[in-house]
Length: 131
Image (cartoon, rainbow, N blue to C red):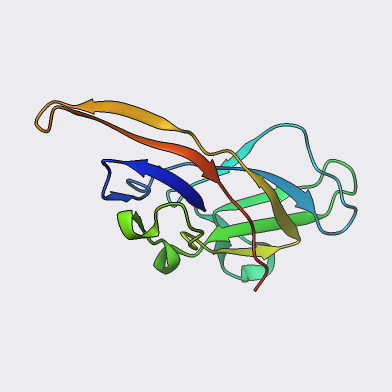
């Protein structure tokens, strides 16, 4: 992720219920549903055959293949003021049959009453890197 920070020292996902909104592509047939889907740390769905669990398990509507994606909790990293306007890895996902192809970030603005300054996160950009 990359962003422009205004009077903000760091940005990080808050809580187990933080939603990572993604568009996900089926690795088997290439289908990309139009709707945004989200994954959270709160969700923990068992995989078939006792192979562990994932943040999301879904069956592709086109080819019926069961795919999953899991948020790797230990990889969640804040985006700090020193990272301003550069790319930094903030989260990693373990993907089994799914590939994230788009992310829906939200610009955020507010006013800091104590500092008497506007604060914000703007021009959020992203890219996915396969490991």
